[in-house]
Image 1 (tube, each protein chain N blue to C red):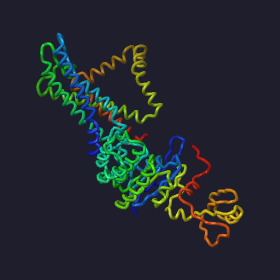
Image 2: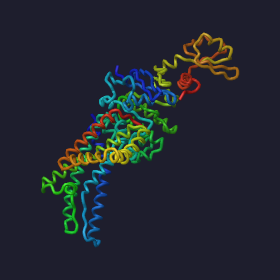
Image 3: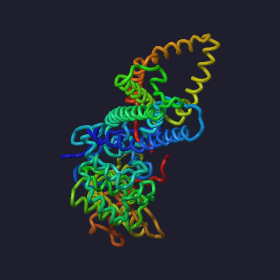
Image 4: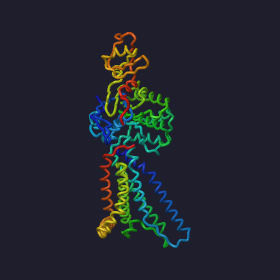
Length: 288
Length: 241
């Protein structure tokens, strides 16, 4: 199966290990959520995949051939960065034009259509765009490239709720029209949870979860009820976290529980992706 | 390879500053001409305006890395293409500007042709008359081209070097190099070497730039050396925010 592979990638910045032995496969035509807290290493990983940074160890391959300094492979990957890498004096329309020079499959018609839908003026200079519109400009560019692998680093940074909603709709439209692999790195987990098929959670430079959203969410559940009843029920189970509020307790456990086997007074519910992410990555703060 | 697109972008990107530069040159020449004509000046000379192009290209080279490198990285261009496109664009820009400069020089000689006002091209100013007609024009073109290339490549090397340096290294080089050239070496030369260093440098300079042909060769060798230093710097360059 065709895929973008990250093999044993390690990256250090001085004494800090930003990524440690990362192994990942991103398969074609799937939408992935790359989730992690601030400083977890998401952007570093994406920058290494696209060859903007060099890994200290390991390699990145596309269908078995190296990506770094390989223009055939680099032209199949487009990354929308959190930062702007276009000359500030360049107009939006010029940026579209130059992107088409480097990505001949760039859909100019779609770019202008999306610009109209998002209310972005193609005649504006990039430096004059607000944070939100700068993100919109970069999003439109990314979604119009028709590259087989599109990496979106914080795609909704500075976007208001309406624009975020429109972005998710457009993403699905583009995906339906031209299936591609999307890797979305974001903090807004709740918003992407309905879109992503694969979930990669990165924490302090290590992958702590890499599986389909469905299988991930099915492995965890929440047991709610009186403190003593919950404690008694979960004592032989793998509890990943718990919360007590008054006399009620929520115990988050890894493993499946048959609803019929629950004692009276206890309830079982699923855990949403955002809550699960918090539970998996919250260890009482982060070391800088 | 994205060389064609990268080269196209570099040439597009250079169009505006070069146009502004030549507009400024045209304005300056017009000012000189009208001044000579309208004000009661007994005599005047305009010399070697080609040198201004070399200085412009040095500054242009100093501004030729960061912005384009980021754009190229954004668009999946390899570092090899970044380097090759820079080299090709430098050759095209230097050749074009040398041609324009020689045309301007030719026109200046026609315009500033009276007994009171005259114009001398750079090569003639430095080395005296080196033949006439087409051979002089070709020699002047090649001379300007090699000079432009040396200045542009030096500017490009400096900016690439600074891009790769951290803050401390930048400060050290910014202070260290002028201090070495203008303080330490002259002091050492006077006290320790009894002017032997400056004599040796003078001889080397005379040897390297003593004739138009030696200058052309020296400038081309220097350009090649500067670009040879640029490649390893670009090869390991990463995108910085």
